[in-house]
Structures are given as structure tokens and as C-alpha cells.
Image (cartoon, rainbow, N blue to C red; front, top):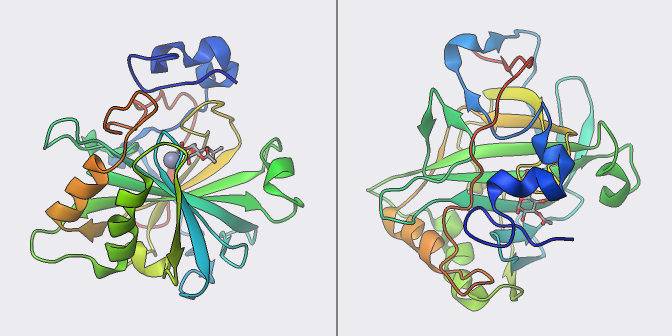
Amino acid sequence: EPEWTYSEGALEEESWPLEYPACGGHRQSPINLQRKKVQYNPSLQVLELKGYDTPTGEFSMINNGHTVQVSLPPTMRMTTSDGTEYIALQMHYHWGGASSEVSGSEHTVDGIRRVIEVHVVHYNSKYESYDVAKDASDGLAVLAAFIEINDYAENTYYSQLISQLANIRYPGQVTTLRDLNIREMLPENVDHYYTYQGSLTTPPCSENVLWFVLANSAFLSRAQVWKMENSLLNHLNETLQNGYRSTQPLNQRVVEANFL
Ligand code: SG4
Ligand code: ZN
């Protein structure tokens, strides 16, 4: 498969559709969440997150050349409002940082980009594996949350992940994290979300992702954000920064929310 980048490289963002036709489709992600156009749906229930808070076991963490990605155990599950159960596979981050005040979330809210965005990728449990689910129209769900800067406190739930970034500076390097509590790495309040039908935000941009973007943010200290933005290198030996796609047209879609 052709190597892709966000800018100046093998296959920059504007050219993704040439090699990956779905990237030029009509239900792409990320999008701008325009609050006055979001449809409140009072029948949407809160997400049920099972096994997110069980801080046990080993998790491999890789620099995959685009981001830092943590493998998650299948005991982590998300059940959505309609009762569909999704199995967690991995989580990864999107950040900016090319100059110190550049934010790098993928979704924006009323045009505002947040500092970092975390994605927990899941697949529909009715499929026997991610490999089968990734090609099914109802195969994937991503839980997304924004991360902002808190100048007053370090987030100790991120200490291990951030200190281990130094061990995976080069693409392809892998390290091990122990006893993570994924629930604590998300916003304190996970009750309120936006939801819409979209795609993977990178090639192949498959249009089979149900998105849940949390309304509330998690927080890291400024120093922690700096380490996230400056610890990893990409395949060109450059600092891995600005790993976010530009927002895509909403087209005929409606974004729903379970809060007013
Ligand atoms: C990141 O590049 C992940 O590392 C990729 O995971 C992921 O691709 C890609 O983002 C798109 O996912 O939640 N942002 S996203 O829409 O999950 C896939 C891997 O390369 C297929 C495994
Ligand atoms: Zn992502």
C-alpha cells in the first residue's frame, strides 16, 4: 500500500483520493461540529464503557510513523444507545505542535481546534475479528475525546505513557505499558457526546465508522503536551507533528447529541 503523509511527502492529504478512492467520499471524517446545527436526540443513552477501568495487564505501545498507538485488550467494550456492542482494539492520538501554540485535534467545535484528540478504535462484536469488521458497513466505532492544557497539575494517569515515548522515538519501535487505567485517561465526564456517521481519518478512509465525540475534555499539563508533541520521529526523521486531517464537508449528514 502506498505510504501516505499529512503534508509534503509521498502522498499528501490532497492526493489521498488518488490512491484511496474512499478518501474522496461524501461521509468523511473529521468534521467541524457546529453546535447550532447539532440535533438534540433525547432518546440517546449514555455510552456504557466496560473494562475501561481495570488497570491490569500489559499493553504494547508503538510509534507507527503517524502517531503513538496503544493496543487494547478485547475485555474493553463499548455499548451504544441502541445496544450494539463494540470491542476495543487500540487507542492513538492526534496532535499539532509544529510551533508551540498549534493545536492538533481532528474534530473542531464551532471552528475551534483543541490541543490533542484521543481515539479509541472499536469493532462491532457481531464480527469475529477486526479484520472482518473493517470491511463491513457497520463494522467500526471510534470514541473520541479532546485533551486540553491544565496549567496547574500534571495528569498522573498519563505519566507512564508519556515517559515511555522516549523509548519509541523511531517509527516501528515498540514498548510495553503496565496496568493502565484507560477510563482515567479520558475526560472525567463521559456522559455527553456528539455522534455521526463518518470514516477513518487516514487512508484508506473507509466510510464505516460510527463516531462518538465526547463533549467534555481531559487535561494534561503543558509539559506533558510538549513531550507528546516532541518525542517521536516520523519516517523522514522529522519530529512527528501536525498529525491531523483537515475537516471534511458534512454533506447530507446530521450530527446528533445526547445533551442540550
Ligand atoms: C491512526 O493513524 C492509527 O494509528 C491507525 O491505526 C488508524 O487506522 C488511523 O489513525 C485511522 O483511525 O481513528 N483516526 S482514526 O479514524 O484504525 C486504523 C492503525 O494503523 C485502520 C492500526
Ligand atoms: Zn485517529
